[in-house]
Image (cartoon, rainbow, N blue to C red; front, side, top):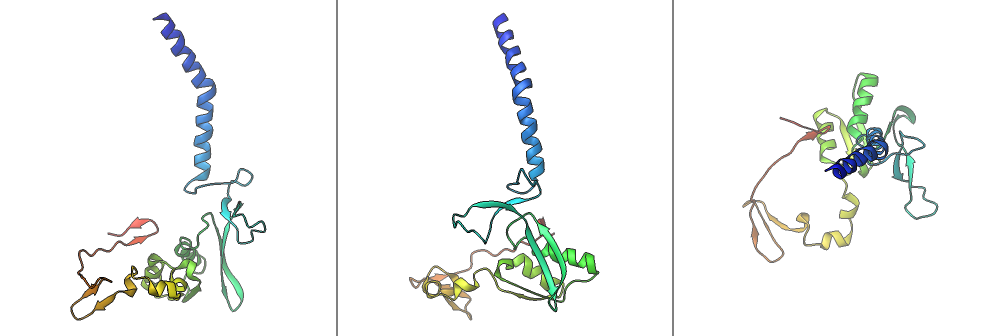
Length: 190
């Protein structure tokens, strides 16, 4: 019984001296990281990203920011820095930031396919913003490989009067279920 207490006291002492400071350090790092998946120790506000200018061509991650700018008549009228490397998740926030700065939403938005998502299209449509945004698979759909792929819904024959698709084996494909999920800024609409 006495040996057990000594062993337990030794484990508690080790936990307090070695493990607890490490756990506190990890908690602090997780707090610094927030909702990101990484951060730089030399610049805690930066996130590790794959850069377009990769001179070594090895896909190395480097700390950086995702800068978004908007222009009108070749003048920069709005800018914002983001921690996430993808553009899709920045558009709504950037438009809201512009609204806050100028007390109105942009009338037109022209961006590349990196911003294409259903949430972004719905947001701009709801606010009456003219959107010139390609969807993510626009360029892929233009290729012969995509057009010949029988697994793509767009390549199936659709019988509009009777509302069904025909699979590559000639079978009728009836609609089984239909649902819609609406997400804005990470919150479900009711």
